[in-house]
Length: 156
Image 1 (cartoon, helix red, strand yellow):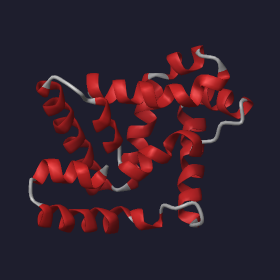
Image 2 (tube, rainbow, N blue to C red; image 1 turned 90 degrees about the vertical axis):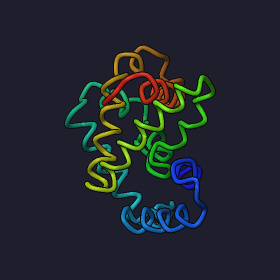
Image 3 (cartoon, rainbow, N blue to C red; image 1 turned 45 degrees about the horizontal axis):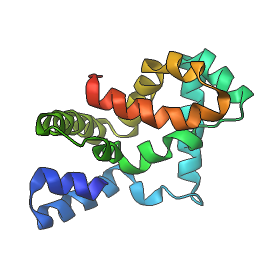
Image 4 (cartoon, one colour; image 1 turned 90 degrees about the horizontal axis):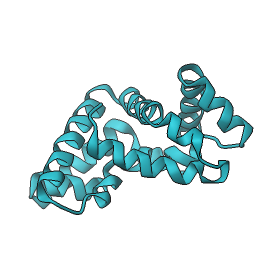
């Protein structure tokens, strides 16, 4: 997803490759795999941030044994570029999404993981009511759907 987005934005394979390497290094994306302690730390940090800023949602997640790894993995590993799949038509919608994603990435690259956590908290806060209103077994499936909607149709 990251490479696809970079390729769409640059329209140049060699520039895409160079940018991809820089993104991997800047955000240490090469360390985001299940056996590396850094991903577990990121999950823990997200869980704590949700507890601090969204206590009702955090309590619900705790009650249902839902930890952040179940809903933020795609956010972390694709930097929200996976929502490009959600954009089908019209082309103005795609352009608007590319602009929003570009702005998000600018912030990510400037501020690092702090920005990724903020974007994730924004998504959770934006759709907290909707997530809390669904059956517990549907919560994890609901989050990506609302996240895609939020990224496409609202601005952070």
